[in-house]
Each structure stands twice: as structure tokens, then as C-alpha cells.
Length: 402
Length: 66
Ligand SMILES: Cc1cc2nc3c(=O)[nH]c(=O)nc-3n(C[C@H](O)[C@H](O)[C@H](O)COP(=O)(O)OP(=O)(O)OC[C@H]3O[C@@H](n4cnc5c(N)ncnc54)[C@H](O)[C@@H]3O)c2cc1C
Ligand code: SF4
Image (cartoon, rainbow over the protein chains, first blue to last red):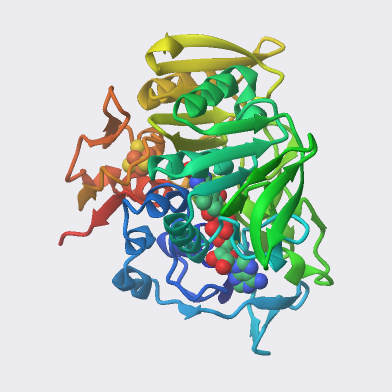
């Protein structure tokens, strides 16, 4: 018989943390609940930041995850604008920057990621990262003032920012180490299609080249120097070279920190301590490997599993990974793990028409399904191909309930 | 229970259809959510709530009706 915790403390109250709180209540948890977050804003959603918020299509308030009334209905204590700075995993006690100590019978870690930066980045004005609402608004206001943007990084975030900025009429150059856009996420073939799309829309690409340094003048950035010797002139720079789990506050906590908070198959890092979302790495039993996902769907799906396990379900978390990205008029849906080494086959539609579904196979086994402006068809092919023990169910809390 | 969706927020993930296929579907042309059962029957309530919770775009609103 599992005893239910009397008080749950969630550190990080954004997509994953808030979804965990909601799932706990929905699954019948009636105990005390505290959500602690470093942010001053009410919980908001991040995917629109590099898209609708950056372009100005949405007011920032449209990104708010839940209404005030809904948040109040959770009957939780919300502590905002107060980062956790220390943790004791055995005592399940968290100390905040103001010296407050919050203790729980169970602790949920949901602190997400912190962007990686380049040397000297913090000394120069005009250099941005893209993680928070304030980041997006600061970049937006710089883009309104300056003409030339250099994006560093050819991954999802860099490509989305480049597309949004082009849509605003900004001159954009994107520099990245990979030979195509999103190569490590979608492979060479689809990455090639994306590279062509961005070129057609007027983004100047410098691919397959390392960025060496930022150059500045009078405290403000004025260029980006590449390993090839070329210096890209810039009024504004965005650095989108990945992020690392925000776990510095967990140093000395007694928890295993590798690539994020290391958890078992149940998303448990230690007795009574769980991790969820971008910052959690766990053992995916179906794939039989450690995985850490940085996507929006994982934040909510993993939250369902963490809440269920907190309440005694002992349910391994075995999702089919999924993310989407919007760039210019291409909406991509990516199911599974389409590794760069996989062979791609166009199963439906036609790349020349700007609508297709690609199926990725490695050693004869389907590892991923990607839709390009064909979301429904991609989902149907996912249901056909990505089944079996290696790919879990989307969620199972309801079905496993008595 | 009544369901409303915000089509502009929906990103076409299809998570809702995977969880509650009797309540949700997607448009063929752009994958945007289609509500098959705006007032789902009792036996679909739990799945519908789960679908709303998992939707990565927070596009599904569940309204409790007496
Ligand atoms: C610009 C952008 C665009 C994206 N677009 C997409 C997309 O199109 N599709 C997709 O699938 N995914 C996308 N993602 C990824 C998705 O947003 C993340 O996977 C998701 O936000 C992860 O949720 P999380 O709750 O784990 O982390 P976060 O959303 O980062 O939340 C972590 C929270 O913890 C708080 N925190 C951090 N440190 C502390 C501390 N020490 N003490 C207290 N609180 C702390 C933070 O303030 C934050 O509120 C995007 C991400 C970004 C940044
Ligand atoms: S899960 Fe949400 S985003 Fe995905 S299709 Fe359904 S409503 Fe749209």
C-alpha cells in the first residue's frame, strides 16, 4: 500500500510543472500543493515566443497557459519571482533566493533549460537568447530598430527565429555548424528541403562553418566572426546553440545529475523526488535507453506519468516522442526519433507540392514519421508504424484506472 | 460537459485524437482539431479531460455543465 504524500512541492511552474499540478488534482490528489517559480509572469507557453510573439501576431497575454480563475481552482500556493538556489533531496527541502525553505513529502523538479551562450555574449548589448517571454520581447524590440540580424545555430529554434524575422522584413543571415538546417533533428533529406525553403525566402545561409566569436564596438555587437575568416555584420544577434538543463541549484542535493536530472523508468530521481519536462532524463523502457526530450508534448505527457507515479501507480513512462515546428509556410510534425542515419521514404504527398509525409527507417525498422503540411496523414502513419513495445501509448492514466 | 477549441492555437499535433478518438478528429487539409462530440457522453469525460490536459497547445477547453 502506497501512502499518498500530504504535501507536494513543484519547483518550476511552467508547462511541465503546472501540468503536473493539474494532473495531480485531476487524479484525485487532495493534499497541499506548492508551485515555486523564478518567473515574475504568470505561467505562459513557449512555442509561440519564436513564432507569433516575435512577429507581433499575438499579444504576449495570448501565451498565458491558464486563466487566473483556473489557477485559483487548483488550490495551490504559487510562489513567483523566487528562484530555488539549493535542495536537499533526502529532506525534500528547497531553499529559495530569499532564504525561504519549502519542504514537501514529495518534490517535483521541473526547471527546464537554460540557453547556452557564446564567450563574451553577456558583455555585449544586442545579443539575445530565446527562452523566456522577456527574451522574445527584447529581441522583437531590437529587430524593430536594427536592419541586420545574424542567427547563430541551425537547429529548430534558430530556423524558426530566422523565418519569423524574414516575415518581418528583417535582413537575416543564419550561421551554423551543420550542413543543412535541422540536420540532427530531421536528417539530411528533409533538412535539405528546409534549407532550400529558407534560401528561397531570402535568408542568407552560412552552413557547415563554426562561429568563432562575436565582435563588438562601444559595448554593442556589430558582427559575428566565422572560422572561415568571414565576419557577418550585424545590428542584432540571436544565439540559438542549444541549452542545458537548469540544474545548478541541485548541485550538492544528492541527486544524480548527468544530462539533466537522472531518473528511473518511473521518472523518479530519488525516493519521493521526481523530475519532469525538458530537465528530466529517464530510462525509456521500450527503447531501453536513457532519453531526455526538449519538446512541448513531452512536458504535458510526462506530467501525467509523474502525477500518476506520485500517487502510487508505478507506471513506466514510454512515450512516442513528438514535436512540431512552423517555419515560413511549412508546418512540420515529427513523431518518433528520426535519426540522421535513417533512410527516408516519401510515403504520401510530394515534396515538390509542399505537402508530404516521410517515413524514416533504420535497419528495416521504422524510427520516425514526419509530416510536412500533412499533420493528419502523419498522425495516421504514426499510428500505423510507430506501435509496439518500443513506442508507448500517448497516455494511459485513464485506461489503467479501475 | 461542453468542449470548445481554439483553432488558432491548435498546432495539429493530434494528441487529442490519439487519446479520445470518439470526441476529436482532425481536418484532412491542415490537421486542425475537429470536435466530433461538443457535449461528450459520460463515459468519454475522463478521456476528454486527459486529451485537454495533454494538448501541447492548450487549445482545448473543458467546461463543466451541471
Ligand atoms: C522559443 C521556443 C519555442 C519552442 N517551440 C516549440 C515547438 O514549436 N514545438 C515543441 O514541441 N516544443 C517547442 N519548444 C519547447 C517547449 O517549449 C519546451 O519543451 C517546454 O517549455 C518544456 O517545459 P518545461 O516546463 O520542462 O520547461 P520550461 O518551460 O522551461 O519551464 C521551466 C520553469 O522553471 C523555472 N525555473 C528555472 N530555474 C528555476 C529555479 N532555480 N527556481 C525556480 N524556478 C525555476 C523557469 O522560470 C520556468 O518557468 C519551444 C521552446 C522555446 C524556448
Ligand atoms: S492535441 Fe491540441 S493541438 Fe493537437 S490537434 Fe488536438 S487540439 Fe490541436
